[in-house]
Image 1: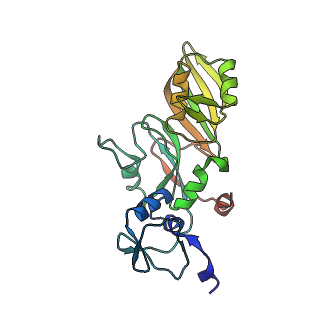
Image 2: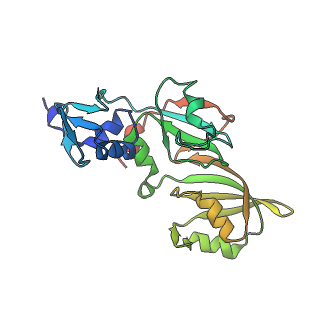
Image 3: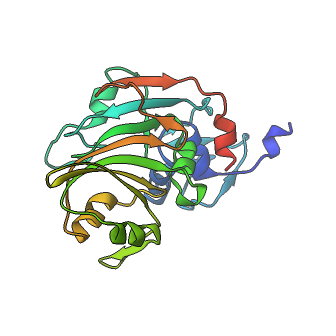
Length: 242
């Protein structure tokens, strides 16, 4: 009885069912694909309870699933989307051969990047881990062609604007150097589109390899390219409270 009184935004409830991300849930609502108690709605801010009946594309919404998380080593040359007019390979076609479940990516890696990608069955959990204000640090190993000095390092530490886009502070460590190629370690707290590549290009450097090695408390460790493993982590609720 008490549970019936708990209010939850309808987009959040759809995302928590594992059907899709919250952003996708909002798109479905705006497009008139969602019914609440038999009526089509287009308002993402409606609150619902466990008494309410929700349908998405005329299918009754399933009960909320337990939060699950997978670690995946995304290979270079794969997209983190199923929407591509060029027909390029995507990770979800690879993953569905291993897990018979619709998974949601937590953030993205571009086509030419590789490394750790988190996947979940819970759209709200994905959103929580993506939001910059929740301060989940992303760490990357980056190989560049060009020169980076301490002056550039200091600029990044204070945040930078490139082509009218403002980027939050980035920690940069200079690693191994071989001729014009140099390895860097970069740590940031947001994931704007092709952020590292655009910033390096701004300083006259070309990124020729980019590997994400960690995301928050989760690490790439010994994962091999293309490998997917479910993480038995006990503190998901703690992460969701952030």
